[in-house]
Each structure stands twice: as structure tokens, then as C-alpha cells.
Image 1 (tube, one colour):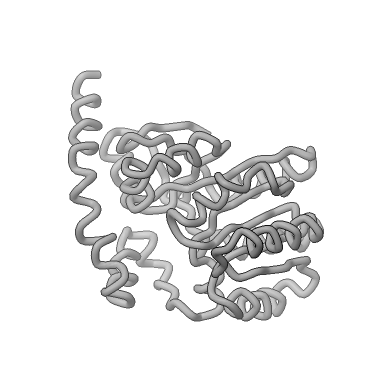
Image 2 (tube, one colour):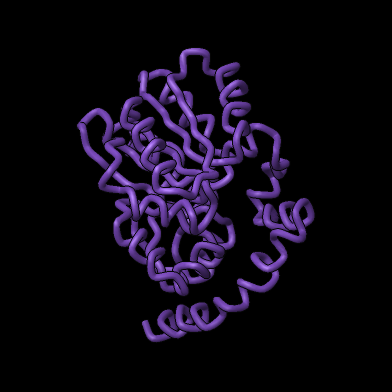
Length: 249
């Protein structure tokens, strides 16, 4: 694993196999780790949201979740490989297979009421012995948050997946990190929405060639137009800075 700086943020060159190895190691050794990820959207938020900065400072590992970052890193001369771009759409099944085989307990927090339960039914059709519980991510009051924390505590998960979308999920982790005892905390975005079929899953070949964003934009234009058509332009000064550093070497 190598840690790189791209567009002003730190990322680790991790594949799915290496991430699963880190997850297993943390659980088997009784450790506690926070695994984050970066794509262009998170980098845009990072440079505008102080709590996002705090979240990434607390993260032990930060994998790449976006082929544009891999392509950008390669243009700068880093030997990044396509499998070092890891999205949860690709990682979820290897991760759940690992959890079932090792009897790791998984808790998923996120999605609209009922969506995560639909995803669990589908996952259990593949992994019948998977130990998993869920709770939706639509709660606002402190008392509701306490109830969620109590549910997580009672289940004692080895893996806690927080899938509320950026930056809500990162804010929740920062606010509650000291109150949860999972060995591994992952910020998983809309992972279970894809499994449940609530959000259409892009063809995997589009992800491998860096066009997954286009599929998502066409699927949800009103929600994602700003993210994919406006935000990347705000990263241009960071890209110029990367190029300037490269030329000075």
C-alpha cells in the first residue's frame, strides 16, 4: 500500500483483496479502524467542510472510490491500477462473503425505512449464514440517535457500515465515533440502495473505463447534475497545483 496526495487529499492504493485483509486483521486482532474513501465529490466537500476534514484526519485508511482519481494519478506518474479503484457496488459481495465465512457481525445504518431490509433479503439469498442487522438513516432527534446507538451496541457488530450519503455519513461518524465499538467502521454511501434495486446499478464495464458517472447522471439528472457537471470545475486549481508540483520535481 502506498499513500498518495491527489488534489490536496491523501489516498491509499488499496484493492478489494487488500481491504478485506485489513478488515479481517482488525477484527481478529481486536483493533478498531475507520476506513474512508475519496472520489471527486468527497474532495469537493473536503475543501469546503471542516467536519469532513476532521473525519478524514481520523480515518486509518482512505481507499479510492472513483476512476477519475485513478486516471488523474496515472497522468501524474503514479503506477495506479484499475483494481485500486474500489466502489461499494464492487466490494459489497466480497465483503459479505468474508463476513459470512468468518462469522463477522455486520450492521448497516442508512437508507430510507425498509430499503436496507430489502437489501438484506437479497444478500441472505447469497449468504444465508450472514449475521446482519440494519437501521434506516432517516432520524434527526437526539433521542432517536441514542436509540440507534443502543441498537448498535446491543448487536456488537464487527463491521459497521454507515450509508447516509456524503457528507451526512461522515458527520455522523465524527459525532458518534467514541460511542460505537465496532472493529471496522465503513462509510458506504448508497450501497444498500443499489442492492435493493432502489437505485439502478451502472454496468460494471462503465466503472472500469471511468464512465459510471455518466450512467448515474442520466439515471438521476436533477439530483446529480451539480455533482458531475459543476463540482469538478472547482477542483481545477487543485489539479493545476498537482501539475506544478510534478513539474518542479
